[in-house]
Amino acid sequence: MAPAEPTVVAANAHDDEVGKLAGLQAGRTTHKEHWGEVHVSNDAGKARSHIHLTSEWDVPPQTVFSIFTYPDNSKVFRDMQRVGSRKVLVSKPNYKEVEVEQTGELKVLWIRRTFSTWLKVVEDSRDAECLTTEFTLLRSDVLAQFHGRWELRPIKDESGAVIGTASELHQDVLPHGIPSFLRNLPVMGDLLRAVTMRAIRRLMEDVMACIRKIKAGEAQ
Image (cartoon, rainbow, N blue to C red; front, side, top):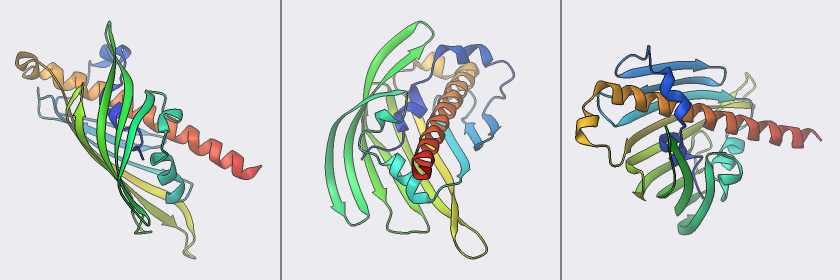
């Protein structure tokens, strides 16, 4: 099963973010949103970014886990065009390892191209107190490094009933093919953080939209 939009977080951002670079502090960008808080950091002028995101949803962890592990989550995430080949490597009760191809579109400034990314995804729901999806890059047209992990923990009321999900994402991203002379410019780190921040927002908006649809269906 494919993870929730992992390639998009890194690469499927659009050109309108370029104009927002002014005011970004070198090395770290932090935003608080209604859905949570996200930090994007890198060494000044370096191309690799680290994402740390925390958020809460008013549905059980299994609901969020089912969104992230849906076999064709291109129907959920707008920046993913399609899920291509998919090979199950390991399948056990509440545990699965999958190799999956995802196709998306990259648009930066005037450049637009379709790209493919192959990932190894580990889906683990054996521990009810922490459901996880972990994804590691196998190969990609646009990424040199990519690794991340979602952790989904139950939020409980005083009686012990599950009333929501506390989620946390750690992710490292290094784009492919950035020339060394650009990689050493401080503005490159600013640009990558801005692009990544916008893509994270889109991912979270898509997750919330899917949760709203699920809740509406349960209410009918």
